[in-house]
Amino acid sequence: MRSEREAAAGRPVKSPCISVCALNSDDICEGCFRSGREISRWGVMCDDERRQVLHSCTERARQMGRLW
Image 1 (cartoon, rainbow, N blue to C red):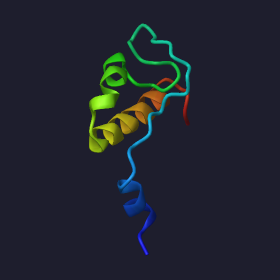
Image 2: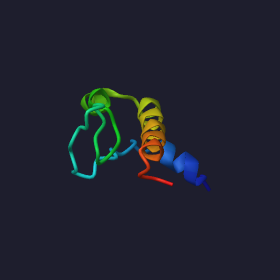
Image 3: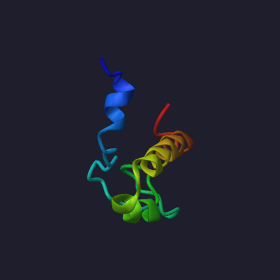
């Protein structure tokens, strides 16, 4: 039986978009915490790049006091 991690590796990484699309003065979306560049490139990124972006989003959310 495959592990959960192996099963997830076969599926594309989903966008963190929550339909609250508003870039702040630092060019970071207030909804998903991606930069404008990350949002525009999401469709052409490989899954490893997307996972890195998701990690960055989590860190940004913490820095902005939106995740603890």
